[in-house]
Image (cartoon, rainbow, N blue to C red; front, top):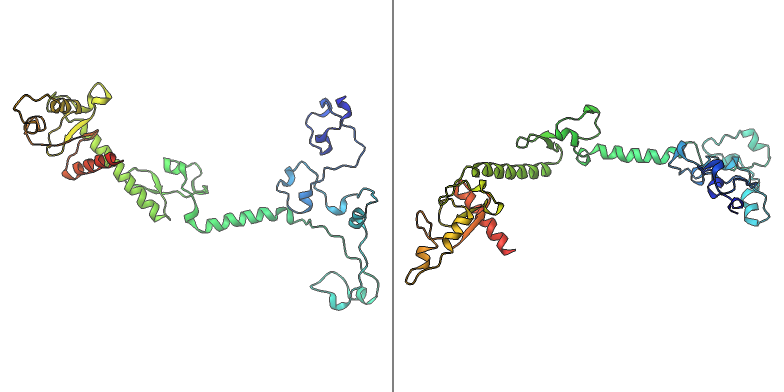
Length: 293
């Protein structure tokens, strides 16, 4: 039953099954696999298009009694031209114009030899315009990683060397982006230096390296706001959570440093230890900002 049904892909010349197709490949009608976009000069596939690239003048118009079809395929009406109508070399001689014979305008389609590549040229022109402004080009990721096999033929920009991260990731034509990258790298490098320095810091109570504790929850420093002695978070919290006896002042006993007895009203948990007062203030400000949110 299905063999009686015409294959719609065969009609357009695009059936991939061939003789194994379950639909009929017998069709007596005229071919209908002409690319309409090609006739308008807009086919983007070019030679890879699966439809036929045929000019309008090469098509055979099917017989039809309808008025629109007759209007489309009817011969153009003759036009009498005068020598004054000849504009920029239409290819007609003066003898032909003065002979008085009727002139039939050619039935020229919208297709032309150059129209097929017109849209490609527009895209290339757009890309060329972008290349005029180097700030619009992207950084080559291969060059930023260390090695670009394309070398000078690479269509992307090879960035300048960042002195901090040692990668070619600084865009030479984007100063704001360069500045932001430098600030981010400096901040990251500073954090790594502090983290490396913190690996050697020991707690003043348990005398163990804070970042070498067995559990992740214990691998934090408990920074006192008014003291510079290092403690792990578990030791300082145990010290400050003791139950006061009668007649003992809480502030002078449990809220002071176990070493120097300076009073601190809160403990700041941190994964890094500071080396300057400015770094300690940064940790304190960051902790307070987290508490607000």
